[in-house]
Image 1: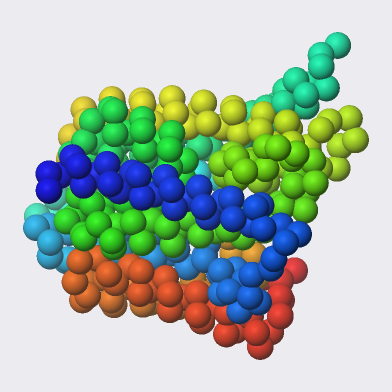
Image 2: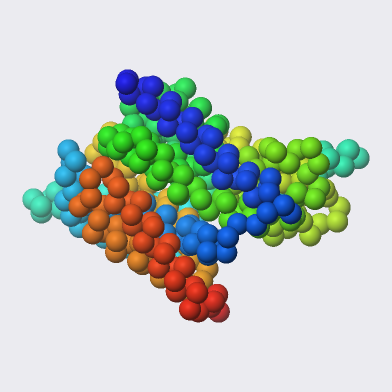
Length: 113
Length: 235
């Protein structure tokens, strides 16, 4: 299977999947209720999913499939975390993290690290 | 002056205008991530239009480019989008009674920001109709989302790898995480997921560590939530 076809399968699968996720509760409203344990489990999806997307990208760099620790990224991630907690602002968080990363990478380069 | 439906749509559009600035960097990253995965403008446009979910789009493009199996790509991206199920459950009593024959498609305009303005403002206004207000807010968001995706797809390819622009992805998610940490159990779910992801993602094959970490965090949160129902953080 070609890469392009595979990617269109992903787009199609996600299009149908996300439409169902958004629509099912509207379609079944007033007709049926999901089980309570499912609702309790889903309540923590936002916190869990976003954290899972953050942590590996902040701790590691990935070269040819191998993960190695990335202290510059950890430093930049902590600075961005501080700004995110304080401001809850996407642009301020993004700018802080990127600038600290660039400075840390430049400093590591100068030190021959 | 205008027809009530048009007036309500404009009111919804106006309500989200101050927050569209926040989705532009996210859209740029989402568009660039499709290009970084080796695809073109058509894929970026189709994905942002049809999938209509930024975090899922970025995660799917990244996992795909790392060679994860299609089921892992789609499964992980859908789990990330599962918060929309919670939003839909909570917005249903507000819009379904007024939805009429549009009920079947009114799930599509549901995104973080259209949910927020409709639930926090639109439904309390007696001068607007809630369904067109909700759709109007989404139209502005969708237009902004689409244009910033296109800009990201066109511009992302020009940025040299030494700028480490891939780091923008966890940073955008970091900013999105803060409003999701409403209760103590959310914070605990996040910490459990973070520890699990740090250990499991490098260990488990084909990016399956991500989905396992999410499930561990969800389960931990649900367990803790059961013991201490809804204590507020910092309240």
